[in-house]
Image (cartoon, rainbow, N blue to C red; front, side, top):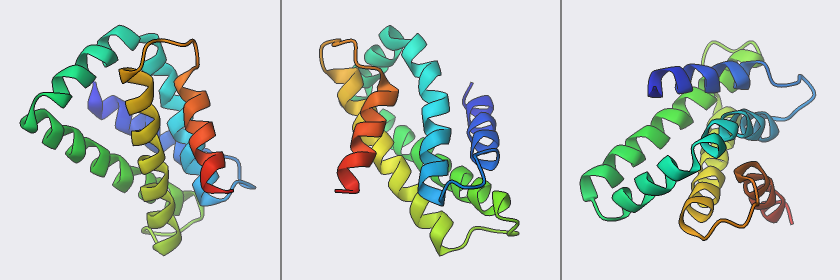
Length: 130
């Protein structure tokens, strides 16, 4: 469920390699849960269609992604020994979730090309870095 996914996201964020900056750590955490989505592509595709046609589901999805941002920011802060997220953690989490949003939208609404969701997320990250 969603609670388990958030806890896994938090754990992956906290356990990211020490040498990774906050954005890379957040992206690695999201890549870790992308595997779950890849295994359920049909369900994810059906949900994307439902979300596109329902304001209520779009709101729920926005709430979920906001919760992911908070979860990631908290995890990024914890991995650096902070008691709460600072500006670096908060911005990195927001950017990572925005990149996730682009990647999952593209992956779930376009015809299957065999490109893994993780690869689309990585591609989006590379585009932001020039």
